[in-house]
Image 1: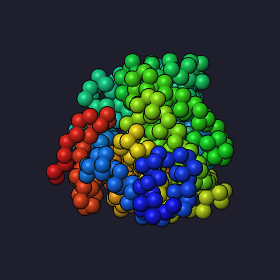
Image 2: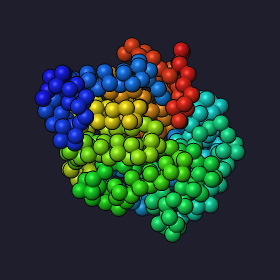
Image 3: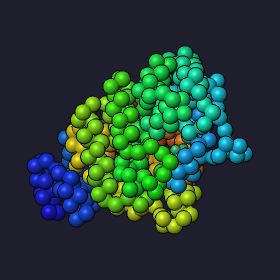
Image 4: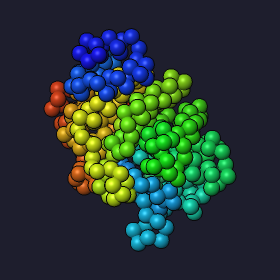
Length: 365
Ligand code: SF4
């Protein structure tokens, strides 16, 4: 089942999990990419979108200490920090003045001392100072952790955040939605069911979300396929997912690498296969699939834009989580013009979008 026509037929007949796994395991990555690109082109033409955003982490203190993470610091560590709402506002205003960003992407660790009032002040202060900047914030994992320490329901936390000014969730914390993998890579984080439940609650409360998948560590192909089917099933129920972002695991500074459970980054062939199978499984349920250049690098991102992906996620000014893990992308901020160039190089058209994929403006610079 591996000619291009075989793949086309399998997709048009409706892929089961078993079919998708066979395609993933048996087909050449170039054939998968070709069919995925055809489907993406039918869906969104030659457009590639991204948002101009700044990333601010409110804290790097995290009690979860996941073996996949090089970002966290224990409380009291000389490099540990916690930013006040005023510092975050200052960072947003600076990024707006300097780079014309339209989105704040804000995440952090599980800080045991933070209160719900801290987040309410943070979101409302940003909204007041920069009402035209969208706040795309905490992962479902952070919502789960803070709900537990504040003894609230996750729905209540989401409601309080939304009422204070939060516009959307960033979709992180999904990793791989299978417990056998999560037990090893994120042993002290919530489970897959909780990620799905909190994402659904967010959608019910009118908060749109992105969704992610971390691949290239200890997972097997069936975990990848099952994860993408879980995303599709959630989307079919709620229609609240804006973008699916496969994130390549960068191992260098992580415990998983030090312990020898991962020997190095996954091969480029896997990057292409993951982007392609994402489109083949998601079909038109999630319109945009990310080529996340901060994890795969800009060169590979442009390849993924010919293999089913159609969004470069964002300029991600100041991204730190992948950089701490050893990402090769340079420290200097990436501009809109630079990302637009990547898109035009492969004969597609770059568009700046807002967080909600509603307002699109073609980039001509
Ligand atoms: S991945 Fe998230 S939850 Fe895990 S240690 Fe890093 S910041 Fe904490």
